[in-house]
Amino acid sequence: MKPESSLSMSALAVRSFRLATVLALPLLFGACSWFTDFKRQPSIAPWEPFSQTDADSTTPPRGQPKYSVPMQGTTVAAYAISYQPLPATIDSFTTIANPVPVDERSLANGRMQYQINCSVCHGLAGDANGGLKKVNPAYGFAPSLLAPSAMGRSEGYMYGMMRNGRGVMPNYNRIEEADRWDVVNYVRALQGKTSLKADTTLAGMPGQNGATVPGPSQTAPSKPSPYVHPTVVPTPGSPNINSATYKGSAEKAPEGAPSKEKHL
Image 1 (cartoon, one colour):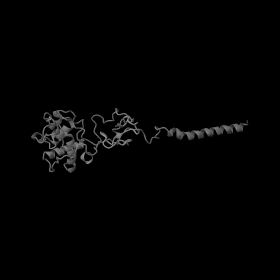
Image 2: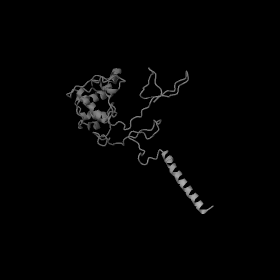
Image 3: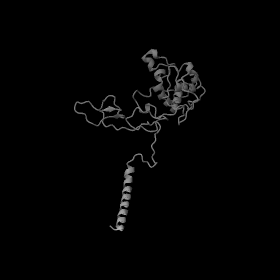
Image 4: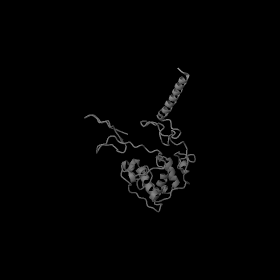
């Protein structure tokens, strides 16, 4: 074999190898979900679980650091006044001013929050004749919000009671901070201390949704819940099924066999 021919074949082999490598690179790296070219870096959003497995319901989401201030701000930080349910701690809220003005929006939101969280003990009118007392008079330990002692409390104190809780009353941190001030305004309206009158009629019946319940909160999760399309349509009258969250099996069960449908 001539040397020129050998060199030509060697050069052809090198070019073929290079061409094969170039063609294989897109297939090799395109199949890798981790190859983001630094454009879409993996991250965990606030309130998103560390686990990315949909079936994992035991790994809690990433919460806020202890004593941190929410990104929306706060009237009283935890490092300023603790969350201890003690009389002296609650008294320290007395001088805090209410930052939310009394208007129709505030009273409407405060009314829904109050009826959902407070009226069961304090009553729709704030007179302590709540549903808990009607079930059993022995449970009527909640004080009337119309009593002189409650009327004399400052708005900061009432906010502190909801934030920390005290005695038999638990804390109501499930109510967002801005919404707590709306509840304070509504209680003031119940006490007749505002120019606007409090509406004590029911905002809605149990099970109702939409405009009868409060809207999204300020600190709602930043990542919306994924919508699960139902694979089995519940029959009319099926008990305990919410079509908005229903998830079932598309497999048809044999005649007479129990259904494989499951709930979330």
